[in-house]
Image (cartoon, rainbow, N blue to C red; front, side):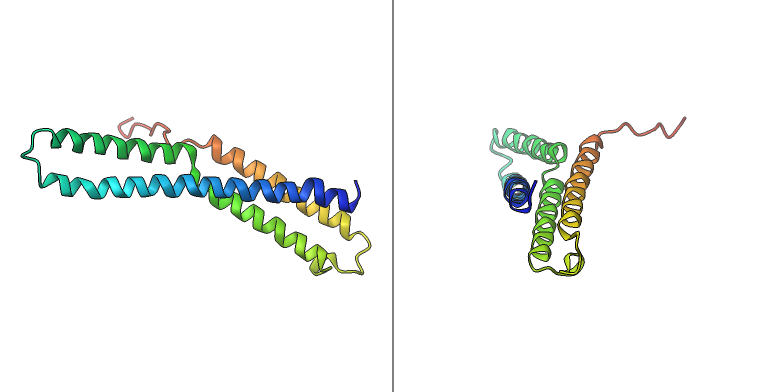
Length: 149
């Protein structure tokens, strides 16, 4: 694969993918967090109206909703994925610009600059994939060992 093809078919596609996924995860995270904060703020307000019969049910429903929204955030790891994808996207862009300006390890004197560039880019992508697999494999609901055992 030549330089132009690699940039067009591999690098730009990866940068776009990570940037897009970062934005999606950021939007999910911020939307869920805003929902959680707003609902939590409503509870004290409604508590002042507890003498109205159905308000206690609304407060209970809001509490359940907050728990579900928090659980969705934990399970889907929107915040972690947002940060990870954004970091990878920006790192790929950084390497692209370093290569384009023949800076750092891609100095004009380096006869294998393109090869070094590809190795670094593929290593970044591979590391992100590995980090993602590790993040997904971790569970936040592991059973704690019994303290009395």
